[in-house]
Amino acid sequence: MTADPLSLTFAALADPTRRAILARLAKGAAPVKELAAPFSISGPAISKHLRVLERAGLIARGRDAQWRPCRLEAAPLRDVAAFAEGYRRFWDESYARLDEYLNDLKARD
Amino acid sequence: MESEQRIGETTFATPSDQEVVITRVFDAPRELVFDAMTSPEHVPSWYGPHGFTLPVCEIDLRPGGAWRYVMRAPDGTDMGMRGVYREIEPPERIVSTESFDDYPGESLNTVVLTEEDGRTLVTTTVRYKSKEIRDAVIASGMQAGAAETYDRLAEYVDSLAGIGGRGR
Image 1: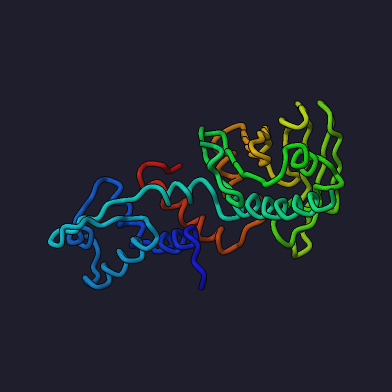
Image 2 (image 1 turned 90 degrees about the horizontal axis):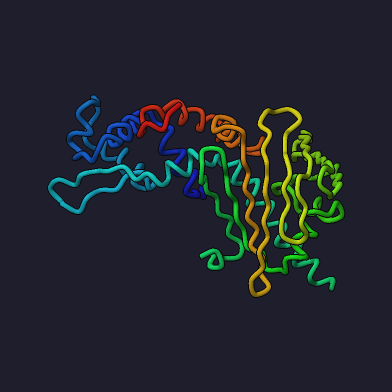
């Protein structure tokens, strides 16, 4: 499966637990233990959710091995909020076609 | 700097609540890009995503002149669009209105072309009447996106209120 950044973001956001984690992180960085507290799921399950969020670039994790606080990364969220895939695709693909067409026009001269 | 943008890369930005700015650099002189973007002989050759066609392309390129496109999706669905040119300054500036037949959301589109070293930067500023209209048009994907994306987008929008206060 090809996974462009926007698709990764959408996939990560499709799960309610992950959205709840993001909502908590919107208030500030937090350690994994604190993020897991509101959910009745296992530590490994929380870790898996965090890995999905991290891969989508929605969160970053600190270096401190003991604490490893998570924090929200806003850029992919802004991307998704501002530009749904179809809108981006419309312009990007039109312009890619225009690139090729301009090359044809130049070749005709 | 603008000139550092690579060929083949489209950038998007939302400098204000009502606007979307789209930029692209083309490896061609400005006159050629202007013609390709404004002539009914050329526009159907590139307008729309892959697989789309433009069976109707009428352009009356003068201030007050109307334009009319009908875009056909790969599944045969037609989407009509229309507008009126407000300013035409070849080869550097085009201002026009744009609206869809079947959807709300008229916008005022300003296209500016600047040339440097034989390459042309095209900056399109799409201005909607409100943030709500802008976001609705974007969320609809200009009716050219995938249904599953909409489903996921709908879920996402539902969750926005809980994320950083950017919600409805």
